[in-house]
Image 1 (spheres, rainbow, N blue to C red):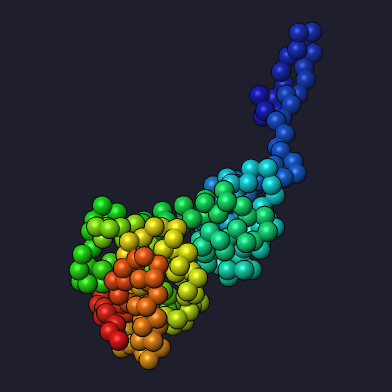
Image 2 (image 1 turned 180 degrees about the vertical axis):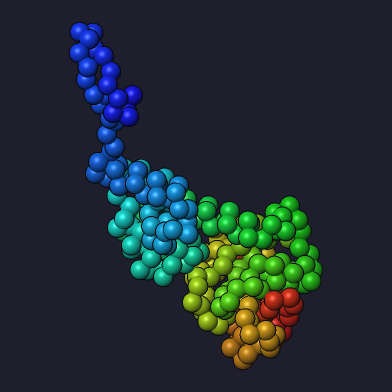
Length: 241
């Protein structure tokens, strides 16, 4: 009836059907954002708006605009937010464990969708297997990024972590991020890689120094170190010190 047509009441007097009103306030804003997303998809929205919608589902009674602004200002982009650690996320005002868990879940799903050949049940026992994993994961990215791969005791992939955009050099990832990643994933083994968008597979002095740090650090965290790799669009090398 909400099309403005005349309807009859019991007395036979015509009256205009009442249109169903749309929500107002915060509910109205959410409804408009979701309607916009349904019409235009992600291409019609910026990172902050997409993040705001995502947070609707973790913070159902909160206006998520402020949280999305803080997250983008802190991590630079939606990609940076999704790649942040749980501790980094919960350090942002208004982001609790539930919201952080949702963001990490979306990140893990997106990583697996970007690399469909990755199977959590598959073992990666050799350098060739691990190198191929990294080549398929970050080799086509146009800027330098760092990736961590956590494996269980049988060297089956647990999960991947990709550094936020804008990183330059293998040392750009913090030691704290690595230690938190191992603790959170309960990894038995860890492998590290970064890509060279320019295509060369030459390890710098800094790359070798960082590799030496990892060789000493990882065993102290009760995990085995499976190496530091450099990858390009179709190949890789393992760095030796």
